[in-house]
Image 1: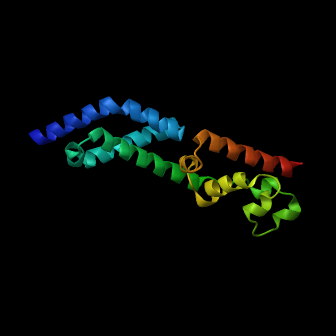
Image 2 (image 1 turned 90 degrees about the vertical axis):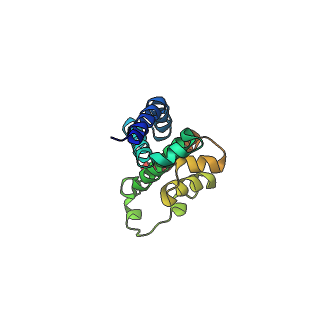
Image 3 (image 1 turned 120 degrees about the horizontal axis):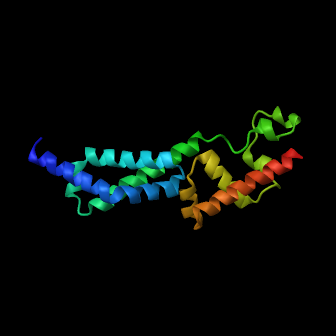
Length: 163
């Protein structure tokens, strides 16, 4: 191992020791899953290892590291949203005569059940695949507020069609 490699290793170990706990807490806050938070922190460090010369030469290595972390969290959130099933399974909630409809827009299903604002949030989350963070930033509210609006909207829909 060359002296440069030893210095890089020492730099990366110090960076990990100093920032891994905080990176994990940040990832857990956004992803709300311990396993995914660990994966994102590990992936962040893998990128740091691959780009060690770039991070060492950066004016603010910590800023570079957290920038990678936030991009990976955003990518993970997007991947999760794309893999989620649609808002409500039509087979579970709609009366049998509506189940035969081959193409029903969300707006048609929700008309008169939820507000236009709630409908917009659901469409952006589940049709377009936006993340909670993106919607929260756009609307100027917290991610939990977006999550609660989505949850209440789905509950209104279920309640309407379960009766």
